Image 1 (cartoon, rainbow, N blue to C red):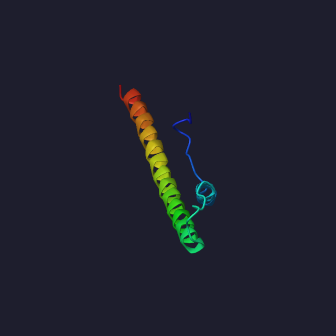
Image 2 (spheres, rainbow, N blue to C red):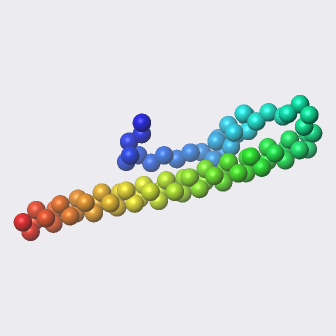
Image 3 (cartoon, rainbow, N blue to C red):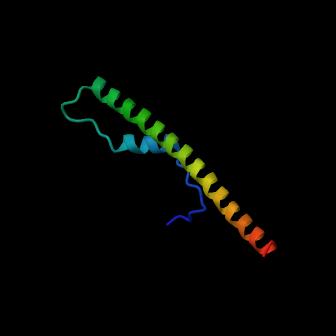
Length: 81
């Protein structure tokens, strides 16, 4: 399990290629239809990972900000206690 303080970043292209690797052409599927389906999967998976990475970056910064604020609160409490 990853440390909650460790940011996870996924390579969009590697992820998309992995998705495509598991998507074989159906026996009765025309090449053009298969290629369109592959392209759609590639684009959707790339965009999905980019969205994930942006969300992860935002969450990571928010977590760091929260930690910093908690530490500052403790310092202030000790200083004025």
